[in-house]
Image: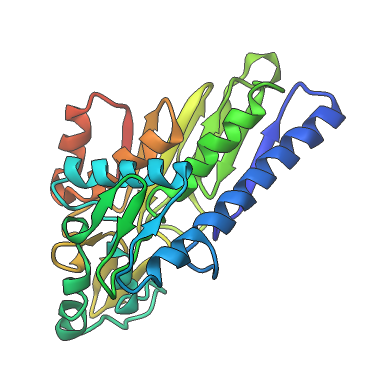
Length: 275
């Protein structure tokens, strides 16, 4: 998941707690192995190296592709599972290495879900195109691991790189206290959120950005232009019933740029914005 993953367990026998952590870890590792774009030989690699040939996918992958297709429609093309190829030009490492307009423009012909042929269970990408589940994979892993853990205990909090799901309160009924990182001060907390049940997901540029000539370039890219979304909050945290839903809303909000808060208000969800 390219980030610290942890499970907090309260009010459980030590043996049960160990079982819970083992289940969550195994599920995170399974999803990482299956859907990471950095692994060779998995289904994503098979799709991305097919060279224009059709690929028949399993049921789980088909559900993720259906979800990606739906997000593309809901976002008017701004949430695009084929936009990962833009990382060939962009390296959000905190440096000042902003790509040239020509380098970004050269990648746009291989970006666009509308160029994909998808009809369950067969997927066909044009040569040079790629699928990237990075925008939904971590949140999906949280929800999937939580489903395995829930029968053993509901006194749990799963946290995969800042995407969290509480199955219930701590022992004694106390909420889990979650800190949201400051966007202006390193290793500082901007606010605390009490979470009893449900999910929180945060999207922002506090750790992934470029800075050149005083201008900050966040890592959320508009796939229609290949450039970072302008006017977006530095950080958006969204509460929802599932981590997948919370993550989807946080990302869609950032893709709205300056209208991020208005978008979330219209969805009638609880959120916290940092600019």
